[in-house]
Image 1 (cartoon, rainbow over the protein chains, first blue to last red):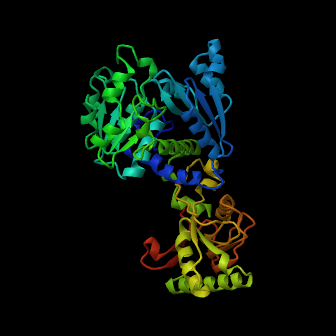
Image 2: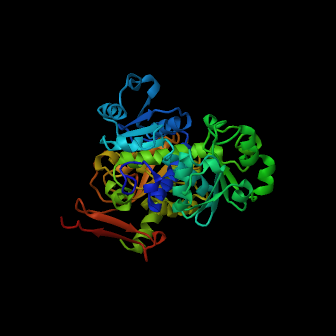
Image 3: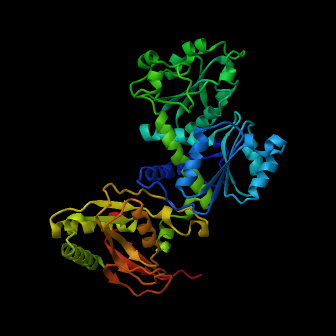
Length: 321
Length: 178
């Protein structure tokens, strides 16, 4: 359990305390990753099934490594080599996999809400690894973890999220988590890529990159999906890059000296982010990848381990003797 | 046990460990590891004693055994996990594992499993302030501050100033009525 949640589906439903429960645990999990033997026995005998209906390298391997470091068995399942190609429905697939008695199902799906649908039909814990343009909760948690590591308490900090906000599940999870931790969130991108009324979720909207990043403590650059280029939303890569991309010159002139840069990956080098910036000293992109494993360890541990942290603690540690 | 008795016990533990380390030729290769949370402050006190007795201050580490517990699945509760910090090479060291209370032995079993994931120590000794009996595993302490004869299910609490107690004290609380 994460707080009162049996599943990890959307940060919109998480309280500040529940978000911090995962992030604080991730600090301890990160220490495990620095050990000479990166394996602890806590989820021995548990099974984690990764159900990926959409391409992913980072998130899938991150969940897989997280499960293995905790000694759980990880089974990876991709839709291209499965019975989905024979017309099996999502719920039927999930139910069949559930009959194999996994403890956690990790699901990525192109349709928003798919993990929730599965969670309603199976008995095991379900983790969303990204669903459509809805949410990507583990990414939101790892972004907050990475920012807290560098900036400390996020209350009063300002974070700009730049790119295709409309189609970004990362933007939504980041927005929910960051505002719950007290940060101010600015959203920036082409007007065609910012949903109307998004301000009601607690963010301010900017169309000028310079204005959005001025004085910000961190900037999250989102990936521009190739399939969007050339459709009416944005005219072309060069124009996007010119107006909303971040290169070394803009970073130098527009960002405060301490401002850090995040990107959920994969990067379109030279489109939303210039290589000098992606590989430069402000970039926390590789920290995000490492922290992603720690955060996913924390999620799996809390969901497969059972009830919430309050049930544990000093008294029980004593009883363990 | 009152503060004076605890002081004496810790002092004696330090002397005994120092003597045995000298006899084993391991005085220069000694390291202390406290088991969170109760063992940490005792480990710090023992380190000071050992520094006095040996003239060198052995490195100090802390171990949180929550990820190595054998009952995570059984009790269906995820215990709170604190940091483990072993920042010295474990290989070849004579490690003194320190905890406040030795009871079932399960914590020590978990600590031994965790320690070997950091390297291969030359040997491991176990030092505890209180041995209250009730072992469920074949584990014994090498150095014991005091033995308390208490009923199974009673709670033995070691309260130390470092943890916010007004004064050092070991108290036995009878099991709550069911």
